[in-house]
Structure formats: structure tokens, C-alpha cells
Image (cartoon, rainbow, N blue to C red; front, top):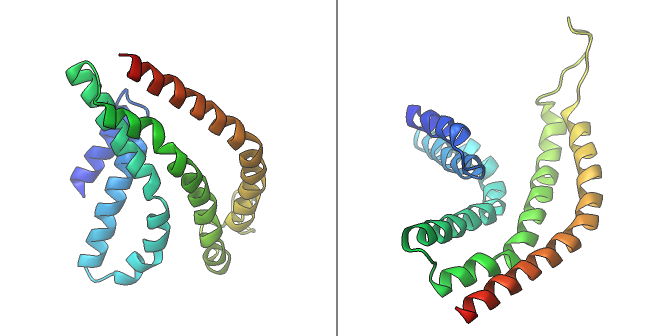
Amino acid sequence: MRICLIRLIEGVTSPLTSRLPCTGFQVLYLALKTLVESGHEHVYHAVEKPLLLAQSAAVLEIIRYSFFGTKEALGSAPSGLMWLRYSTFLLLYPTGITSEVGLIYIAMPYVKESEKYCVRMPNKWNFSFDYFYAAILVLGIYVPGMIYRSPHMYTYMLGQRKKALSKSKRE
């Protein structure tokens, strides 16, 4: 687990901005594997389905780093890797958005029942917070924003794909 902490620190201090989520998934996987091996299978089974939903982000990171690493090392990326880099979003973008909303939705019954991360009054800060209602608020903002922004973003990415793949055919 100390190595996992070092990996997280490296992810935070690295100049590459997308490194932290990828490292976070790796650390989470190792932590869950440790839980299973130490006899805490119930914890693993509680998060197994949400992790399956979140794998599209991990696949995208693998393709992205392979593309940029090959491009830096060789000066250009192979056409198959270029195609993957600019085509996988067709499937991974919708599954990623669905996963984000799905993960919040899946967690809501547990959050409501357990009152995890809730702060109830009275307390010394005279402050109250309910994570369940915060999740509803997030969904209430995220879903309409997703409906408004997703078509624009998807169209933009299709344009980038067309430009990159047509440029690679000319070369």
C-alpha cells in the first residue's frame, strides 16, 4: 500500500494532467484485490459492478498513452493506433457518461440507508450536510448539462477524428 501512495503522489505532481485518474484506478484495483485476499470479499462485491462500468475510462487511457508514447518515441504513430485513438470515443464516450450517471444512481440507495458522509445537527459547527441530496443535486445539474453539451462535444470529436484520419491518409 505504500507503493500505491507513492503512485498517487506521483500522479498529483506529474505534469501530465490525465495521469491521476489512471493512477487512481490502478490504486483502487490494488486496494480491492488486497481486500479480497484479506477476507473482506463483501467489500469487493459491493463495488464490483460500478468498477465494471468505469472501465471505459481505463481503456481510453491505455490507448491515449500508447498513441502519444509511440508518437514521441518513433516520430509518428502506426495507422492502427491512430485509428484507435480517434475512433474509440464513438463507443467509450457514451459508455463513460452513462457510467458516471449510473455509478451515482447505483450508490444512492446505499448512501440514503447508511447516511454515509452525512453530517447531522446538532454539532459544534452548526452545519448539516446530506450526501444523498447532494447526489440528487449533482444528477440534477449533470444530466441536463450532459444532454445539452454531449451532442456538441460528440460533433466536435467527430470533426477532430475526420481531420486527423484524413491527414494520416495524405502522409
